[in-house]
Length: 489
DNA sequence: TGTTTAC
Image (cartoon, rainbow, N blue to C red; front, side, top):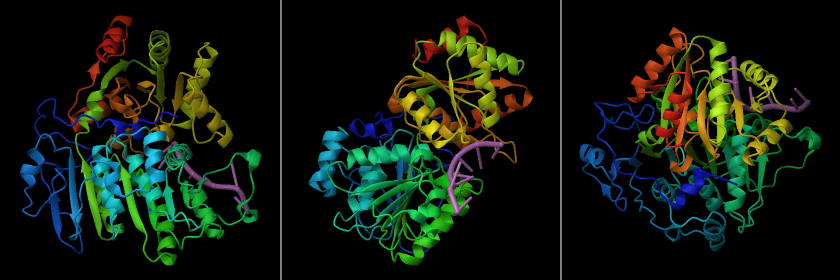
């Protein structure tokens, strides 16, 4: 299985500034690095932490901290006076020999990536404080919480002890695959709580209670299992929200997530909560900091890594027909040998329409969206993972977390916008383009711009991230140039 | 609208 998210542990991404930042650029979604505010906390003391061995710097030299080019990519804020030492090796973490074997033999890791080096001691050191961690796409955050869960589980206790909640079925399955690989020698049991393939469907009421030690799943199924009293939570000691900003967003899974969390709190005396995502906008960040107790924070800046690894382009199109024509002539014909491509659309309907259009004209393409049955979704994902299919149309189902290293090209057939306000969805934009150029590989995104509103949307996105999407005219020559510049030709 | 949901 290819997973850059975790494979990154072998080779930490580059951490040095390659160019001086533009004037007051927005970084990392909504992280304000120009005006570091005191974290809002109820108890404990605040310490800025420098990354060289994670020495606690009580003097809070925030400016110095932010200006250090080597270490400016991660900002750590610890709560209370628990000292943490950065882990330069996995041995530093007191992991079981079985888990170490999984890391070295199965995952082929050598040493922790930067985010892992800092977050893992925070996750694994008593009193097991909660953690809000922002980590770049492909920086190895999956490893952080998967290793955290595997390490904190008592192998002798046959009961659910760790629970991970993900926004999509595909992400839950992907995370489970990482967990099983990494935990191969531990004997720790696990179960995926996602909608089942209808072929082996069995109502939860007829099933035995879950005895697996680690459960990874989606909100609906987890809720169902819990209310049916099949998923006991009294032994839970660690609760993970993957893509936490979306899991706790008003227009995301906030209600489900809070409900699950409250149910757990009722039966489990102390359950550590880990929140991981590549993006946290201010609204979500403020809310999220209220639902955890005494917590540590980790913020990774330099989303430039993501935005710079992937070349951004825009193509102005007269109408929808022109968009389809570009997909055919440029993305299929010209891009034939460019590796895998993913086309993001806004609605399920446009996914189907585009799929139909292209298929009728003889192009081979698959499309995935939430209305497709679980078994078909599995089939589509497996075909794409194996390289059997090269171009995949998707709704934002695959915008987050989907880890497929062969994706070189992302096409925004529709730009990501927020439903109510029609404002650009900056977080989704970042997540979408993060599907290309995984693990520091080359990648490009083509934004198809149709009409004034699209033009305004892309303008705002450029402004927000302080990066320009270079205009590409609709001809072979300009596209070839663009692809060459992106390092794909 | 998209992600989730099969009693």
